[in-house]
Length: 114
Image (cartoon, rainbow, N blue to C red; front, top):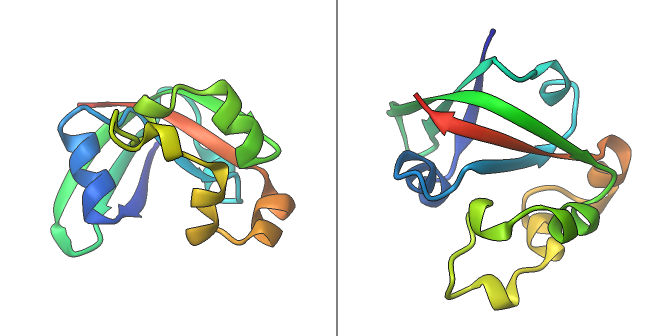
């Protein structure tokens, strides 16, 4: 099954360049349908004509981003050597409210560009 998701330009290009191999999301209804072997087509939120097709390799489900940040390699989640020292699960509050995180849980989706 092919799923679609939008990405801001920075994470979009990190995935495109193979730097970011784990996408972080809420584990909401849409993400609960994703299984290893599926594909995800990511759209650049600033240019919908730009897409990347990826294959889902693994799923990592957690109750909170705090747990996820302790378990997954953050350099594969989009952080760089320059900003890894300041990485915090609170960074995800910018995208998902703490209430929604608590409601749905969170997921790391390991992907590979096709």
